[in-house]
Length: 449
Image (tube, rainbow, N blue to C red):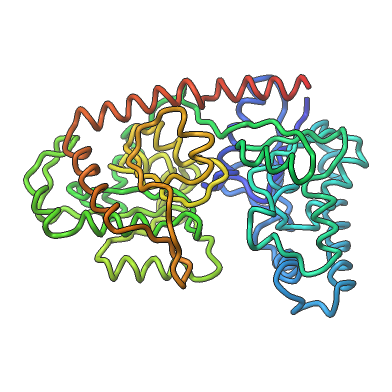
């Protein structure tokens, strides 16, 4: 079968892009021909339609007026006319590509879910029905789960959300990534959905030091004695990176450090007086309210070293005119600890990446973690499941929690057996529960149906 995997972007380090890579690889193993179609391609090969992109200006203008206020269109009629004109252009381009590639099945990722591009959803629905195609709609997030897409400014937008997110009909099969979303979709729309959790290639080759990445630390200005806490997610509010900063601030306290100086770490290094604990941030910055600026200020106030290394780390290894770029997997090789303090996630790609890398993980127990992941039995260092937010929207938890977790983190870092056994046990759980083998079974079932 000839299949089109569609999204706003591919070849990036966000969860949807990474999950699409996995689906493509497995569908091709099953004998299908798979084509990527997106608004931007990053380091992945695909058919690019700029109007689908996250930063396409006309689409952003429509989005602002559809969900915030009528600032650039006179009224609802003018907004709906802009949506229609944009949809017609996209419909024409998608039709030509689908026909040229002889597409038989479309797998839209979040296009019929999140509400962010009304013209894209309208155009894709028309093309699917005009060309009599089938679709497996892969829903990572729904618009009613996001504050910025849940309050339409007019009836026309509300009607499109009701009609397209997601669409009804026998040609559409719905896939969600967690049980909360499955229940929510059934309650709101009456649709049955298959839960296909995020997975990882636990059968794949482990990430190791090699000729390409051996100078990773040196090129990023990191010293051999420094401890790297990797925050591999995108930089956006719901990732609650401030919790990781606060935790490292406690680890940096004089009385905590003094207990560590001179001790042998899990890999044989010695914790020195000048050993620095660094929070490494390779992910894309996707904040529209100055969140990253607040993180910088918090880190400065708390004496925590942040390293923004997005220009050095990407989806895949590549080279620019001035320097080579490492893959996200290279960052995991040199990480000593993974921080994953998200307060909301559709599932948890970066969690599985940390499990595959056999690194200890500091986690906040967000809702989907508790419903879909926790029961597997992973061993983590948990910040609990309760938080509050301050006036700036920054998450915070009780300080006593950080103090308790600092002891657990240090105990792990200086106990080679515990560090190694935790990583090994978590990896074995991931292999059994969230591997490509599991995804292959689910995709086989979907394709048969």
